[in-house]
Length: 219
Image 1: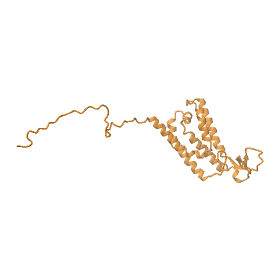
Image 2: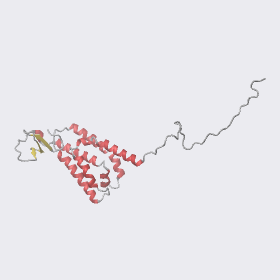
Image 3: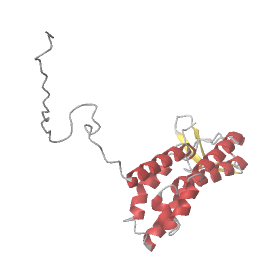
Image 4: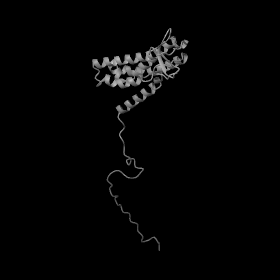
């Protein structure tokens, strides 16, 4: 007699209970919640700020101390509500001119330390240093370094160019000064600050200065 005779196997199809919601298994692709990608506008703004900072950070070293800070503090008041009205445009132009002139002017100043340790500032001229405060009773040095020269003009022009490059990197300035040319100005400012930085770095290395004027550490 066959031992397997009389043995039957039954197969039952039992449906699995339905599970509401996504599967909790780690391998399930729907287990991890999907996050919407950040908006294009936010990414564009962040990218623009990062580029501006990276391109202009090295240029600040060529400016007198406090010039860029004063410009950034006064620009919101001059720009107003960003409507670029005629009054706002004129105020921005005046602010740019004053800051650029200050960068140019400060490179023709120098200083010396008196016997009492006081630092005296003056304007360099072809004859020597003209001290701002007259009647100090301190003998002004007559060295050759206190006379104006070609290097002073080079540094003054380069400093003004650096300030303009940094100022034009702000959309509040370019949008009001060049309305209707936003795309063109964006393309120009992609490389203009970097070009100015490289040019000024090379010229400052070729024409070094020993001035310790306003905005620089005293001698």
